[in-house]
Image (cartoon, rainbow, N blue to C red; front, side, top):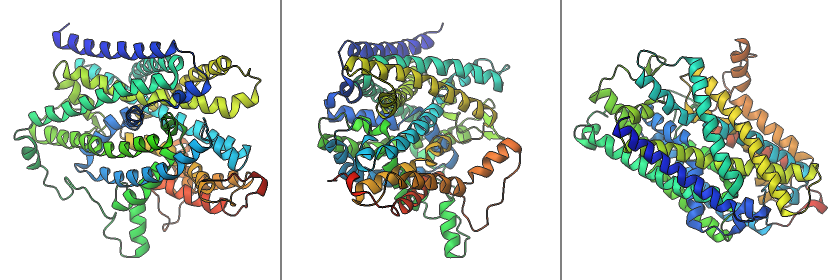
Length: 543
């Protein structure tokens, strides 16, 4: 074994040892349900901030966003940060105070207080389904490194589709079970304090990656800019979609059919973040571990500001990689997809092929950190919502805290198996469709349902007499159907399954991109929910 590989393994081994140690440390403390799920609301704001970042910066972001930078050679993806910041202000001012006021553990308890049990159950069910799909689909991302390592070490014997599936599947299972171990024994405190370590490792990995790339491009950043002279290279703001559209509706339609525009940043990403940071138990549960609503708001808003340098760093990595492999180095072994360099594998390929020992180990540890950080809280939040919203109601459970915590721990292991299954399914689909975009897969999975979730919460928080336990399910179903039709989901599924479209959408109807899906679902859900009046005896006072 070379000294470089030994150093990589040492760094990764130390990282895993610390992670396991943190989980063991918190497993020794006796915890009740509130302590296990919310850390006794005793976590300092800066640790909550780190945990929020660890959840947002998944391995999908770590590899997917450089892929967007590599593919687009610009910063238009960063436009979405505008909406992210605006949404955090709304979440901090409206959503978080309501959750603290009503002292909820599962945020869907709030909907029962406002409307009734049916709204709570359906909202929680949507979360369980969507979060399982979104978090499970991220699991296969870090295994890209293993495929790249194998193919680089065996250039004459690359892994085929089925070999990739089994190879990455084994790694996916190991990562999931290790994360489940410290999550199940240590609860949310173990998750958050491992997130603090993981975000530090991630920042180090990103910083060194940018530094190392600049050192391998003649002239550094100025040298890279000399090759970035295309009409869209280094662009930050993209105002519209198809500039050739000659009618007002044509221009609006082109915006809705374009991923990254200023309008998507202002409106699309605003609704995306309101949903993910205001109605998703996975994210909100971290916020509710803070000592009070003020500290929670500080952590939430500062996490949005911290996202700015992180997003620009990962996009810069992708842009620099496009210069490195497009103008500096001609590498015939570059991973390809559909006849062009595979943007999803370009960064892991660079890490394995070019980076020196030690630095390579740090980046690999950073990838594992992002995966385990987002995965740990997903497991804890899924188990918490299931136990609080369903299990404790359906099955007789002793009132003792030890018995209830045991149920949540078992649920954590159960959802680990669910996430593993989703991850394996995603790996299989990606192996057979290498041209798929990581960001589109991950963000698209919750775009179909979170608009409905957000719509019901908006009605609950911003009105006093509209929405009902009878009307909310109707509104949520309408929201899901609207997004499915506007995103052409039925035709996409039918084409994949039977090889033909079910029907033809009218030409005037836009096929909306993922930043607009949650907004569309929210507006439809709110419009339908407002048609139903809240019975007087079920209205909870807000404020």
